[in-house]
Image (cartoon, rainbow, N blue to C red; front, side):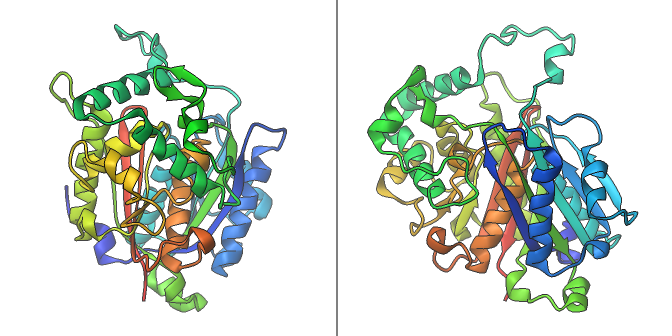
Length: 382
């Protein structure tokens, strides 16, 4: 990896906005996206004509949603780029927006994610390449098998894995933007198995929604009179794809470990420095696997730590205080942008009853089909 361009020219999150994640509805994607963008503009105090570039993340909408959506705010001639990177589409839009500011090409940039689950067309399925599995193992069965392997390897109980969902549903119940806003007990989470020990409430809902963040340079903060205390800085932004691993290697966890280490190195921080993180927890077992891969604890230690409350709001590190993908939801395009919005809210101290006390350093993490991984490290501004 080369030097970190975000170290040379600081990039700040100055505005955040969301449209609540929800089940499929007749709401047009334009309305979803503009709700989030308008909220982010109002939060930042920046006017639409001041935005110089936009990166629009979506995975399911098809060709060119950005122009038709953003033109409703006014045809200003700004640069618009469409971003698709599976579940990491929104995270990648943020990464490109951050690089746009860090490069000096723009001072004020929008990253917005929007999607509606109206149909899936996954390119690897029609790539013409042989595959022994050939689509016979659906995602929840894949992660049920991973959970079974993990439990047998470390003696982790099904209840400890399920407590990830109990925690995240409780967090989502406090989040007005979450798709699932109901506290769930451990017996409720353990009920209704769909594959092995994997239950319905341990799988994320895929619906629709939108999230937006506005990024700005130091110069823009001064020009528009933005309070630096409400403008957390993105210390590092790293995007990687899987390498050639030995047979039997857990791909997503190994890729997560590599990407996160690079992000920590670029930011000059360690896992123990983190106060809050938003992690890709599409299935409950993923949170345990990724926390260990990131170095927050050793192999097999995440289950007992979850049970002890170490990753609760108010614990040693708040993990997915938004509710995570399990409760906040996973509409694909918006998901990674929404993670950055939540960490920004936490670092500002504006998360209300979801607030992690004295949060100063945060991280967002998404993986996507490919496999790809995107990690951002953010720090509170003083």
